[in-house]
Amino acid sequence: MTTFFEDLTSFLDHLRVERGLAENTLRAYRVDVEQFVAFLTGLKRSSFAEADEGTVLRYLKQLRERGLADTSVARKLSALTTLYRFLVRERRLDADPTANLESAQVARRLPQTLTLAEVEKILSSPLPFTVLGVRDKAMLELLYATGLRVSELIGLNVNDVNLEAGFLRCIGKGNKERIVPVGAAARKALTDYLSFSRPQLAERTGERALFLTVRGRRFCRGNVQQLLQRHAQRAGITRRISPHVFRHTFATHLLEHGADLRSIQEMLGHADIATTQVYTHVSTEQLKEVYRKTHPRAVSPAAPR
Image (tube, rainbow, N blue to C red):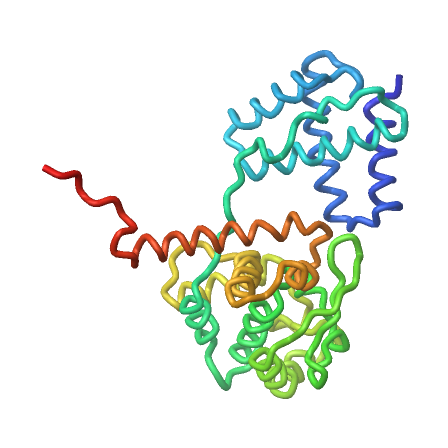
């Protein structure tokens, strides 16, 4: 019988070599599986083979009792499902205790999005004719125009963007390259940034990154989050806005204006179209809300007296 360490090492090697997952994704898998190992160890179990379906359900119940969000519980279940499928496929185990457990059993919140009016307010927030204002405008316009993940945004180099042709090249999850169109408004903002702000920010560093901090360095995730939140607050939006909210908004607005799911899947870089289909639920909910507010008989009339 193989040990936790042996199985986990083989699993992570498989994800790294055969599936080409990025280091951040590998770390997330490691953390999720190691937490399950700690749970099993507490039950005096010494291998993954000693967990059955009931054991996994007990683990998920414990996670909920600890106050984890439904999305976090779903992610951890997904990690275990991937692990056990690998172990069965490699004949390290005879049975998969997660085979009858689906992520759909874990409640999933619909992604938060912005209205077009809210997006326009945020895009209008940066101060024009200032080095940082022009830079921030370009970053915000590009986020909304492309739906990039924050890691993809900060990973862009200057030569990844072709403004004349109207597209950019980015490296997404699993180290996969994709081409994403860039609309006219974002191209204009980027042109202004590249001709006015970036030369001043890069004056002493020679950094290749497309977007630079005030010190001429590549952005980190936290920098982008702070920048976006600052402009959202200036736009009068009090709830927390993340770069991923812009990504969700990009996809939802495309769908609402007639884009097909396959095209949206390509632009977002989703490996599975099932991931993209969540946006159909978002649009349906919004349609129902509009109908409820505007149709004269959408709400049940008062009962007759």
